[in-house]
Image 1 (cartoon, rainbow, N blue to C red):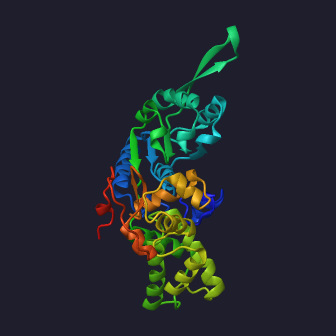
Image 2 (tube, rainbow, N blue to C red; image 1 turned 45 degrees about the vertical axis):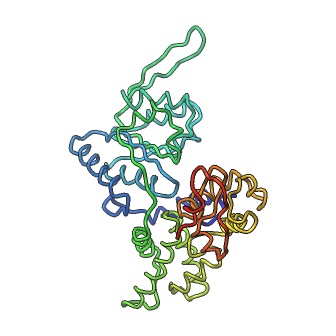
Image 3 (cartoon, one colour; image 1 turned 135 degrees about the vertical axis):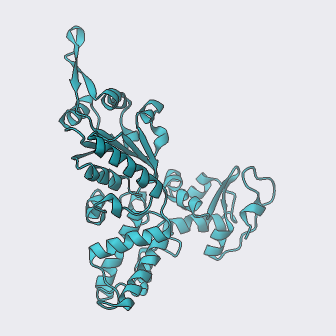
Length: 361
């Protein structure tokens, strides 16, 4: 269910990333945000190019939708190398991985998305490929089985994961470069949306002039503030705004068109959708602000507890709308103000956070 939400950071359908290809930056210089990581990559790319070698293997980790796939494409482009794309779940047999590795040319880039979902047997199979650029292939079986060593061209493995903790220590240690992607502040999302709006050919109130620019910027800023710090969500909302403006506003993008479009999609000023609000309202109205257990909340709103924990709570925690305590989930003052409700802080001890702390102004 969570994949169908417009504010979900995961791709809502298999073709979404393909549609976003046209919105990706074409060079590292055009990449917006993640300054520390990008600067680290620039140094590594320049050094590898000067030596004519493959760059060190790179592990990118962080929440979905922040640009891990885009960075993999840019690394290949900066190295002027071929990019081979696959994913952890797609690799099930050693022969499949061996086929990919033996076809790589010198300095090619192999991008493995969701690398944490690769079977353990294949993860171990990669060790020698990453370190020594060779693989040992078993030929035949039984008493006549023998192992043949195949040499590989030096290549760069770029792994992407949303759950770096699921990778084994030996696997993580074989990545010479590692980078964590952070959520984007609204001002960086605004820059991304300006670039995307240009690529999509969106226009403001008039064909030219400061008024058009101001109208368009006002709409884009509203989108940036409601995109949960995630470029994928920002570009998805921008496409919905483009459709709405085309049908209801003669193709003109304005702040009013943005408000109307997001209202139609059920996205409010904090980027919350109907499921987020149902969760918070249940906690406020049924449990008087909490604390309450996740299973109890899930039963009250007829949703799966796993869905709430994985797809709803992370953003509510990040936005300061929800607190997790030893006794359960607790509504914060910011959430109560946003919902327009009054909840009394519960009495008694609280191991993680006191009621006074949760309801400070």
